[in-house]
Structure formats: C-alpha cells, structure tokens
Image (tube, rainbow, N blue to C red; front, side, top):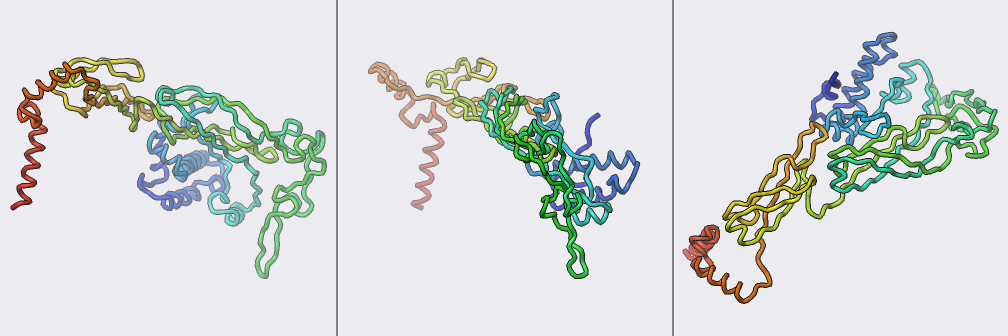
Length: 379
C-alpha cells in the first residue's frame, strides 16, 4: 500500500516554512499522543505517521531528498539497511515535543534520556559510471563501539552499576529557589542515575572502545553529488547500552572527462570536421552503455545540439531515464599542406569572399547588422 504524503499528514503545503511545520506537528502530536489516548491503536498509528513525517520535513537535508525522490528516498532496499532510510521512536514522551519541563507536567513522570551515540559522516567519491549504474563499496571507518567485555555497561564482569545515592537513581535533583522548585542534572552521576564502583578493565568504565569497522555500502543507481545514504545504527555506540547513532554517507561524483550531468540528462561535446559539417555524414558518439551512431545532416552549424533519447541517467524517483545531448563543434583544420591551403583558398573564393553572402547566411546577417549600427551612429 502506498504511503501517504508527509505534507498531507501534517496538514501543511510543500512551501510551508520550518515554523509552520513545527506548529502543525505540535498540535497533532498533542492530540494523538499515546499518553492522551491510552489503548487506542488508531491514535498510536496516527502518532507514528505524524512523528515520521515531522522527522523528515523538519530536517533540511531529509526534506530536500523527500521533495526530489519522494518516499523512495527512505525505503529499505535490503536487510542490511544500505539505502535511503530513516528511523523514529514510538516511545516518545511530551518532553520530545515541548521540552523537559512540559514533559514532566503533562506526563506526570520524570524522564531520564539515554545518551544515544553520535551520528557519523563518511565522504564517498564516486565515478560518474558508479553513480549512474549503482555499485557496492566497502568502507572502513573509525568509531566508538560497545565494549565486548562489559557489553557497554562499563562494569567489571559480575558487577552492576549502583544507584546514585545523591539523586536516588532519578538522574536529577530538586533545588528550591524561593517559591519554585527547579530540577537539575545530578552532579554526581551526570544524569545517569547510577555510578560504577568497579570499572571494566578493558574500557575503564566508559562502556565503549575505539575501533575501526568495515562496512559494505550499496549505492543505488542514479545518485548525484550531495545525496546522502543513511545507515541505521552504524554510527558511534551509545553510552551505557543506549542506541547507536547513524552513519551518513555523503556522495560526491568526480568530474568526468567526456560527460557532464544536469539532473538526469548527460551532455558531451563531439568535434566534427569542416567537410562533415558541410556535406553531412554519420559518426559514432560515446554513451555510458557503449557507442551509438549519430547522423549529421548537411550544412550543420557549430554548436548544434543533438538529442539521443534515454541514454542519460535513470531517475531514482520514477525510474524515467534522461537523454544524452551531444553538442557538435566544427573543428578548424590544422597542419595544412600547400595543396590543401590552395584548395581551401579556391573554395573561399568561390564563396564570394569572406562575407559569403550566399553560402554563409550568418556572416551576411552579422555584417549587415554591423553596417546598420555604424550608419545609426553617423545620423
């Protein structure tokens, strides 16, 4: 079943700014939040859709990818998550929507967020052929990974973190200031709610160690410079067993010696001889799939653009293939022999001089325009 448009889910237009999107999200999130609709599967599913739409439209890069590719930008192509993907949590509380203070007021409970691992970015350079046809790349990245000795908890084998005595495991302490009571992060446990008495020997109680890992990244056909591929949970490991961050692969396509790309079309310049341009003929031009023949009509002018259908780039969004546009450049002959120079001289004379009124209509129009210009100046 096709997914509903994210803009329709939030009830905003595609031209809405960040403020309008956030305002619409807060209103709908308050209405359908599971805490306000206990036991309602409809409200829970609605809240999932709202949060998913907001997480995409509130992020400038994700929103740009969605505007260009639609839901395809975030579909999972295989189990390894090496495609445009995103994740969201249904366990969100009101503090995610309105901040920690309002979260405590509305939900009636104190929350202690786990320290999720940081997101990472990897810059990947691709050839035009790899970007157009798709490929699989193996990359090696340095990152913080969960310590295998303590499974990320930072304690020695057999021991467990102890509840912080200062905050009694809440991670926050209350300080009275006049008529108000203010909550602050516990300075003893730094908001974790627990302290480690016997740190792990391998990671010294951090729960994470620095390692390099090798990943296989699937590049979908049709990507372009500034596209991103998100690998879920392949960033830094979280602290104390929290979720890992994500890895963003930033695509950059190298300059090609023959082709240039504009959206899904490819462009190239093809030199042809003076005689070919005048008399016409057939030449072979390159494409990313091999050579194809292109017919050059007689009297072709330099700079003329020829379109070869469906020899460009296949769109990620709708699978429609772009075209190859070949611009012919008439090349002036060089290293002429005396005989060739004499023949060209005779040819030029047969044209009636350098203006070539009969055989060079463009030259004729140009010089007529020049004459009118100077005539107007002397009036």
